[in-house]
Length: 401
Ligand SMILES: Nc1ncnc2c1ncn2[C@@H]1O[C@H](COP(=O)(O)OP(=O)(O)O)[C@@H](O)[C@H]1O
Ligand SMILES: O=C(OP(=O)(O)O)[C@H](O)COP(=O)(O)O
Image 1 (cartoon, rainbow, N blue to C red):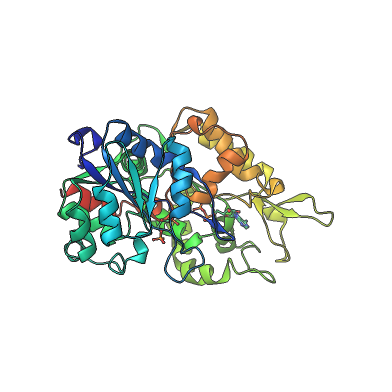
Image 2 (cartoon, rainbow, N blue to C red):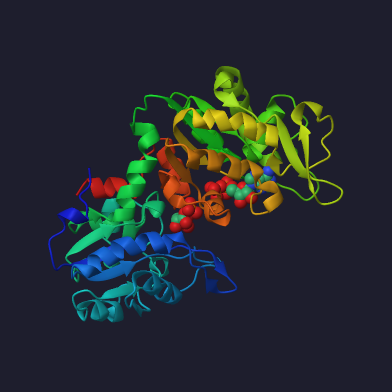
């Protein structure tokens, strides 16, 4: 296992990798729960008198959201109630001078790690540890903390290089995410284990279902993935209508897997019995799947009868994992499925993990209390991998220290 902040010597200069990758709208970085979560780790380190040097990335080179971390420093400062200095440099003289000038309890954020050529591409930890980026920064700090669980599936320098050259520790976010998200692959539950599967990235979740058949007793389906399963079961749904591109490619990519899952594990898979759509008067309409005879509509949520079927299954579960929304919950008319299952989870005392950036947003949007869930993950791709038991490069590198 990895070491944690509890094992860190006092009064260190600590290099901390966070994941502050955020939505950017018209050039403005949007505050989100990644700041709030990482604030705990940063605050804890600063309060006990460490000098705190933060690294993070934003976007990918070439993308509209590939921007400086200057705004991130201000947003984070608001969450930790202390100044966060910013230097527009990743590991050059300006960065190292700013690090060397830090006093106990001060916090400094370095520029977007992906603006340093050696951060990308993905390479072995040994290669990354031998970059100028890693070797230079390592000379100016005493220890490394990785808190960026949600980026830990990437074998980038800031995530896998430093543990080879510095004493390395897991931050609080890394610790919590790792324990909760690995639970389905590593823990034995006494009772029923249920997974709610939805969202638009059907290929990802079908892969999870294919890998987790022995660990999960019941899959409750909705969203685009759910429609693909309904289509495989012979219903006239899950086809791209004019202007949509959710289904056809994902159908081609997953058809065989879906058919064999239905064939071999059909009793573990519960499909929607009704679906919701936008009717002629722009209201929510519902139709039983058995009555759908033509592929003439986009379905935007599971129906109320489906929620009534899923509800008792969730309430009887010992553990519930959620990956993906059951409908287009951002539109209140089509939030019934997603909020229905989330409320059932919140009202029972099962072990629960809600993952995926979009899905977990429904919790705050509809006034639910995050405290009623076991764990609400801030990870997307890393959560998916953890669910299937696949190792995360950044976590493995920490364990080797
Ligand atoms: N039937 C549907 N039609 C269109 N969008 C849907 C449908 N069902 C779910 N969604 C959308 O799926 C998104 C979440 O999917 P996804 O990105 O796969 O999950 P996450 O971000 O939670 O990992 C939500 O924003 C929701 O609007
Ligand atoms: O936001 C992230 O991942 P996510 O979209 O899977 O949650 C991470 O910061 C990783 O970013 P990347 O997918 O550009 O490597």
